[in-house]
Figure 1 (cartoon, rainbow, N blue to C red):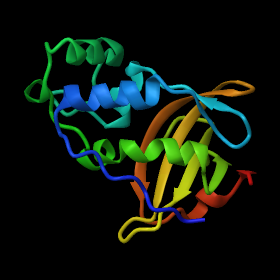
Figure 2: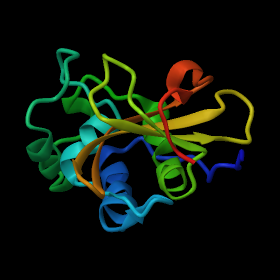
Figure 3: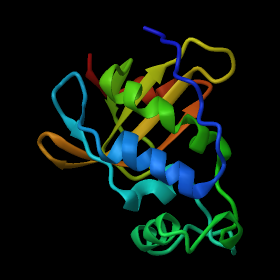
Length: 162
């Protein structure tokens, strides 16, 4: 069932985004309706917002990068940008895990991970938030990436839940 998402995050400051990420994702236990936990750590932060190096590539050593941002030694000007929409919609991730529309196997060859969570949103524009995860154990998953989508198409194949 479609649900109104929480407000988007209003900051583009990396340190503020990382602080929100740690407080609301890393420090929380997020369990899906099956009882499986999705565990966040600061090493995933760069991938969740698609943070790019100055040359436009993925950042190397994402955990060290996050620690440097947290310590105030790196800021927005030391990078080649990030996906502002992904960053703003980090606040939608908890509802995507806790109350997903569906959980499915990952059919996308370009995005690593074993499964994905899909949340249908009651809002104009793109209607879905997706979260790709890698299975670590029978009941533990680690996030790979997350972004909004206008449609889910073949993502609905291989439904694991409901």
